[in-house]
Image (cartoon, rainbow, N blue to C red; front, side, top):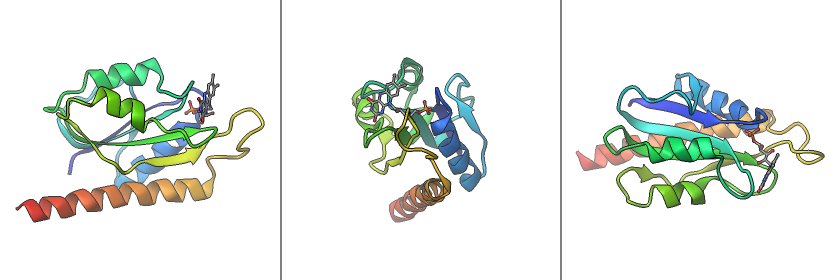
Length: 146
Ligand SMILES: Cc1cc2nc3c(=O)[nH]c(=O)nc-3n(C[C@H](O)[C@H](O)[C@H](O)COP(=O)(O)O)c2cc1C
């Protein structure tokens, strides 16, 4: 399965998760400025939550994605609370050409006096498990379709 990891991380919290996911699936996490240069079956896309939404750079990246380039997207985020980038990503991908998977990974991200030390080791383990589970589910679906 062709897999890529892209993220935008202003203060570095989501980068920690992006790297854990990338390591678990055997690729290198890259920033959203780095365009996809070949079609992928699965894109892990991550970002911190800002003012309840996604930073412009992630929006721009998502808007440029075509179904030809990306079959499935699984999002991950860090934030001060429980917010994720799933809803804003869904809004952009609403035409249904690229599948936004319902599996979402979220970890608390250190922000001011909140969530000190997060993401932590357990969060990284959770991120890796999330990524492997997404792949397992997609592989199982492929098997059923054949
Ligand atoms: C200006 C600003 C706005 C933020 N808005 C939210 C928000 O709406 N909801 C939330 O849960 N966290 C919010 N946060 C916290 C960040 O989402 C959190 O620190 C996140 O881990 C940052 O990720 P990054 O370092 O990968 O960019 C905000 C942080 C800043 C600096």
